[in-house]
Length: 70
Image (cartoon, rainbow, N blue to C red; front, side, top):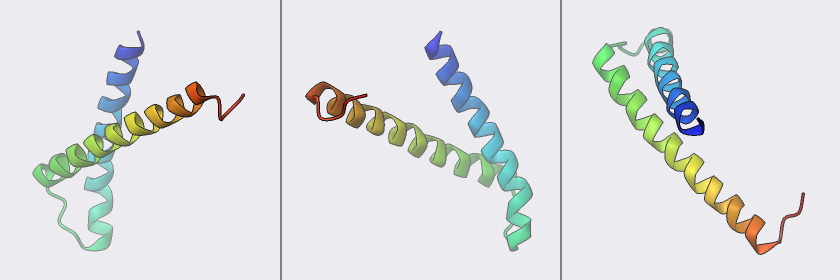
């Protein structure tokens, strides 16, 4: 079930990011085009997934090495 949860989390985050861009960009005088918002949302989603993965690996390495105790 954690895979379904992770995929749902990413999909919802992507939708929130796109909707937020479409609402916020005009406040800063930027064009709010759907195609741009979809592309920018996709880029940030990939970056977020990579960040999450790398942090998870880092903390797992720390846990395994015994340097960080609960």
